[in-house]
Image 1 (cartoon, rainbow, N blue to C red):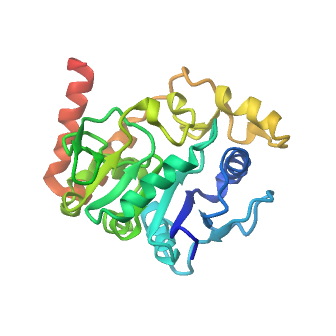
Image 2: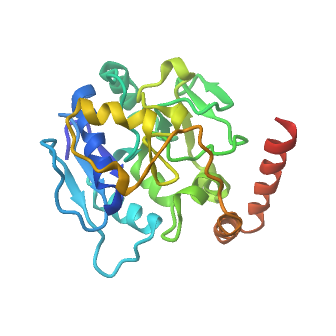
Length: 277
């Protein structure tokens, strides 16, 4: 178990091996992770071309290769009580403020009502709670539970997941699960307080399965990485890739399976996005 009882978990898959290696290069440059064990959640890959020490959590034999199932199994195999969870394409852009991060970690440990803490501001409505000295994400926020860089009380995150979950539906519908109301989900106060600085405006290094040119090209040169970007393809972030109608239908069906009739809140969200904002 690590010194601070906090692990780092990078969520990935075999087809994003290059993305993980880019992530680890930036992690090494901008963050002294010596107090953390770094785990990587992927299917079958056994090693990465990096000198960063990582522990790879492969898909267990007999388990379904669903995002939710793999994430739950990975969390169950992590010994630490707290897990800093990041997606593989969240590539650090600047140094992590270790002192501030340690302060937040210690406060989380001493606040048993806190289930998770976002290291980056997600344009949330927040309410300051003087008892825990944290800003709590108001439950009315859409995407109040999401895959943004966050420190989670491991058991809380496990209970917010189901094996059949996919990341897109989970981000929208997990807030409607009964367990979501049992713990406070907190956040840094605003964008200027972000602790894990990645190119949020571009959505990360990958957009709809393709490399985001503005995010990755210079970094690949900087770290002297020999990637074939054409395997996944390259896109400029402003280039639109629309979701298909069948994708949207399946998204709603996933939500209905997760939370039943509360999934119809999706239509309210779409209405507000299209006609009110």
